[in-house]
Image (cartoon, rainbow, N blue to C red):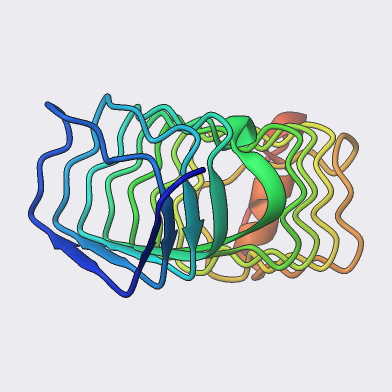
Length: 191
């Protein structure tokens, strides 16, 4: 029933007053748009790009994100687990995603490039082969999270309990290994 919108560019639009019309958006670009505190629920986004947008605290219930990229976006407080997980596939580059949640989502090979992921909830998520390049994970919650083959070599400020998470073949830098020991209140000294 939703209108099909393809190959459109939406630039500098403030959707905080009037919501983005319900539709199936394919190969569209949203640049400099403000969706903060608004409704993005029940939308379909396929092969779309969000650039320099503010999506903080937007309602994402039942929206579909398939091959969607977010660059330099403010995305605080989003509940990605409320999205429709059918063909869910997105990437994040240089985004501020503090206080967002990926609770129980399966996101194999998920990429976070240079993102702020402060206090993000990854509880019970499946992030096999996930990539956290140059991302700040201060206070991020990893509980019963599958992080097998994930790459944390350039991630910073994370605390991950190896007893409570699956870390088989995950990659860490020598300095980053300390993030696996923080919960044990031990002292590691250089010599």
